[in-house]
Length: 269
Image (cartoon, rainbow, N blue to C red; front, side, top):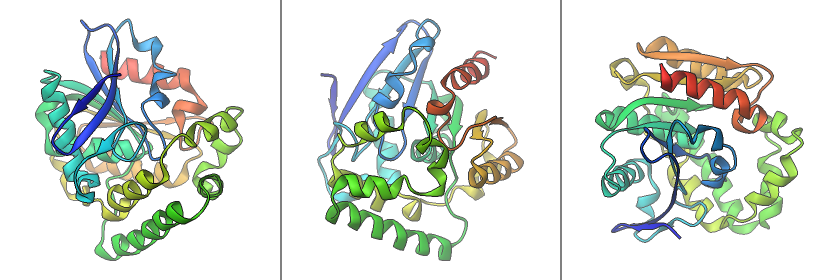
């Protein structure tokens, strides 16, 4: 199995596609892992080399150091170390939800590594300290539930959120739910506590300085994130917003062909 051991992490990763073509780094969302992408990205293989990995607290990746290494700045620095170990000086990046928040942080703090970036259903964090405090309380409560509730019960409650209404009605939802059960609840708890939106540094003020082309993907039915991404688009001078019809928060699952098409079109321009 392909693992890359760093000082404070042991990253599980896979590389698929044409190794002679441009590389795309994929960052999954909360509760997911690299398989979320690996089951869908084969249409990209002729044109791209695809690097997927499990983020800290998810899948087979392990945090070897203290809990601080679940946080966004530390995780981002570790991902840059992964790229350096793999001799990747520059690549494309695609991040979904939590992976998109992390991807935006990487874009704004390590722009020299990224040629173009695709962000699906993501956010620059919360604007005010009071919002972050309230969200951190909520994230902490949910992380405690991960440690105390039976894991299937937690997942039922998580996917009961309005954000996932369209995903719950998708024909593949039961399969996705069962796949989520393979995660370690303790790892997820630490990820939610330290890499959740409540603990994320706000990136709003940095958006106007960004020079890396951004494609912002959001589902037509994901009203919360549609509004957030419209704001990002207004603040960021080199960004393009694409709203995908009849989709909610997870476009990759709800319309994978459209997801592939818009990414190929953007990265090939």
